[in-house]
Image (cartoon, rainbow, N blue to C red; front, side, top):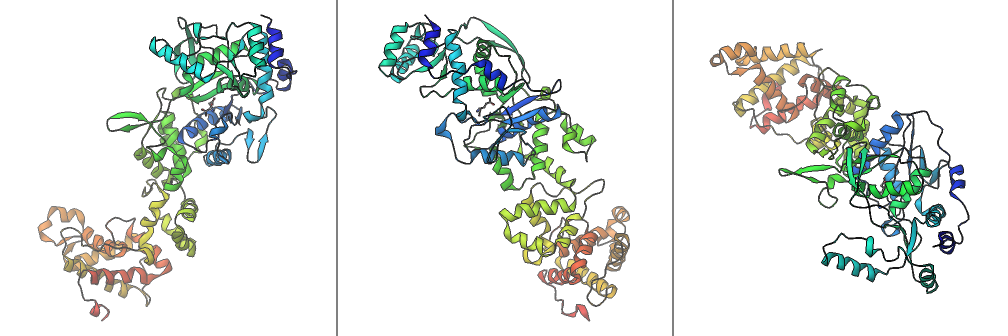
Length: 569
Ligand code: GLU
């Protein structure tokens, strides 16, 4: 067979050479060890956790090593293409600090290794296709869909492996005459790879995440170019990652089974094999067994889920880092305030089988992340979220930003910061008792205390406040210790033990302890049993409206059935 003549017959218009491409896309001038990697999403419009996992892995490897991260749009399957999908991906990932140095960008592309959209690279693939034909490494196949389907059925009946190989590779060694005749008839054709592999052979290979592997060689003459001249993923991947000078291919492990073909193709084209890192699919527990996260069953697979739920991006980022690198949590514990970028990410620490996703753990990580934020950061985060998901709350937050920030500052910043919320949507219920408009109190008396006793405490506290305060009742003791002294005094007057320890040693002597007294006050002021530091709460309330908590004492007492008419006498 005159392969040269065949290549001219199939690709008469291709005149450029691989050598010219080598010159046009020279090896990158980067320091030793710099990683060049990429993401190659298909523009399907669904941005998911898997994208984030891969994006974070490549991004860390590239940017930790002074390398380059680029975005290539794998749009060879126009049926699946959704308009705006790439913009969604770029924006979605950029929230998480994954920014591309090169490749597709909003409104176009940047970098000198493009075009970065596979649909614009047709001529490049054809140059290499022609070269493979010239060298006898690829050939046209004119099989129809029906013929291929019949072949599949025959293989099924004979319990043989599926695919185009061996005796089933009917166009592999056809004569020039047959090919010419088929072309003249105008029959559609695909270009197939002539595999020299055998399933009797194994290939040894080391994956950057999965470690040492032994894979069966590929014996199938896979399609390189479809009948419309568009490359398959396999061919495009090998050509693109060579010309774009990718050093590390980070991709989902669903591609691992095609790796033997990619290794063959790379060798056939005379390219250097990049390093491969096959990222395991994210899994979750379903009952007692693990399963892959599914688009249909698991809303948490979509990145948009986290924004809607109100998870701060930092929380999702740190959580993913936690499940990607087993030592991240220890590092974070040792460096609570360090920027997350200081952590040394290593693909070797990734779970080869895929990380296990657990939303409860995400919540814990998120509580930690939020507890390390300043009140101003929390305010900005919650406001940004509410702008989209809770406009009513925006009004309250913006009415008095200093007040909102003062509320959020309670219990923040110390050695043991409070961890009250994991998602922004929990901030409103948390803050609700500071805003009469959204306050939904539960004034039930604490366990073991009658409604009358609680009302009695509230009355006494009210009178202490009024005595203590000025006319508008805005005064509060100067600090929490002084305030608590007042509560103790009150406790004593009402028959509650002012000292909790003492109370424990002789509980029968008292109605309760000072703790019960302050709990009654807390319930009245906050409308619930759990709240941040009560003194701080009242201090912040007083800063805008001293009447607020004073008024609550009466409200609560009335709700408990007390008559407050005589309280001011
Ligand atoms: N378009 C492929 C995918 O979405 C890219 C795989 C790769 O990164 O090479 O799975």
